[in-house]
Length: 156
Ligand SMILES: [Zn+2]
Ligand SMILES: [Zn+2]
Image (cartoon, rainbow, N blue to C red; front, side, top):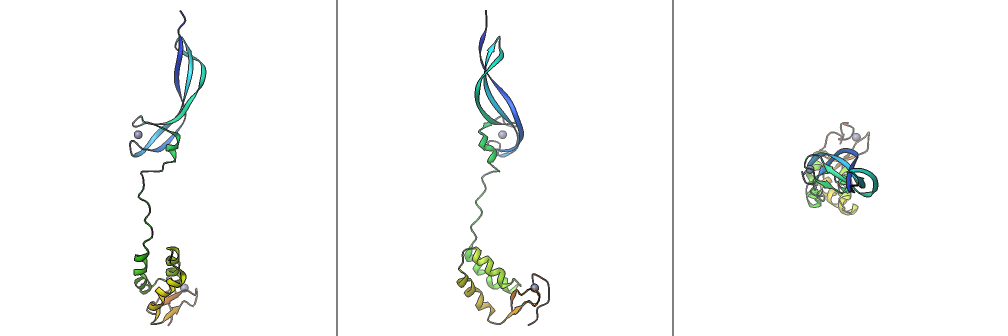
């Protein structure tokens, strides 16, 4: 009597670390390919086709589609949209603490504030005067004594 049939065999194609969605942790995985074989006396003889490739977690045994490797970690809370209101509120303090006008402008415009609006937010706080660093040209509020960029003392 000849005993034949088919059997699914798994071939390991690679391994590595991935973020297992089931463990919710960094785990080792095996990248496997499942193929169906024609067997004779339970010995796989003829490959009959690939059933698919998958990723197997070595901790929980869970199997996942290849795309699981693109998952970099637990669902991250989206980076908070820059809080423009808060940025605007801190303009006077930042000017006072020695942040150059140019940096504030950059931060405000990067957060989506129009240049004109940013300027008009900063200007009132420069009413007492402004200083310009002689060596790098950055602009500061009157009370600032040292350039944040080149550490040079600022003269009035
Ligand atoms: Zn796992
Ligand atoms: Zn400077």
